[in-house]
Length: 249
Image 1 (tube, rainbow, N blue to C red):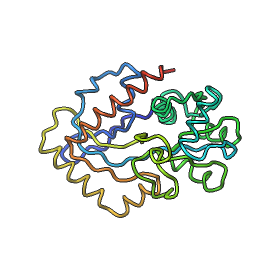
Image 2 (cartoon, one colour):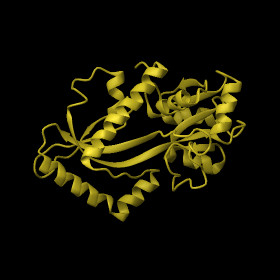
Image 3 (cartoon, helix red, strand yellow):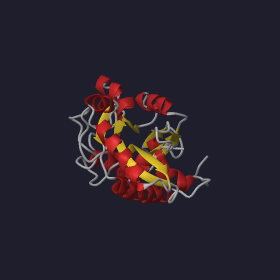
């Protein structure tokens, strides 16, 4: 799975909260879940988002997303990307890239992000669509080269790296995110109170600093907007799973 839904500490009023991520919108397409994904939750608030970054081996003659697409189309099936396994974020991001660009790039799955990264740095596979924290040290050392960040705006940790949209694939965005939901049927007043408390937490300079250091940024939406966001993300990644023919293993 991309991740898991984690039962958070219950607040003082006794209502249980769940921390959800991108996994919540992908898993319904890959697994038979013991609940109805569309009706099980009352969205409370989205907290943060963290984009991927396309990192290639320095010997690969591609410095932009446009270069990468052109190279892949010139050599269909020859380029390879490493991932941390079937259905993971490191698998979904490049499959979205392939779907949007028409590039034919071969998937090489590993059991974890670390061995995937090592394989790319060793030159055995050509690229990884990894998280910023897991790649930034290797980017700064020159063992990997960043082609683009999968966000609408540039990352504060990689300000000189353009977005993928800027560098050759308009509209591309691939980001993991973290949000809070409550069980369906939670009173609106409780949802509103929780949203207010989470919004106050997002104002904390220490929280902002910690998230920035992890390659993430604060994301703000109303509870209603968050519900619509979950629906749109479910549809988006469902199309990717279908188009790529991804099956759980």
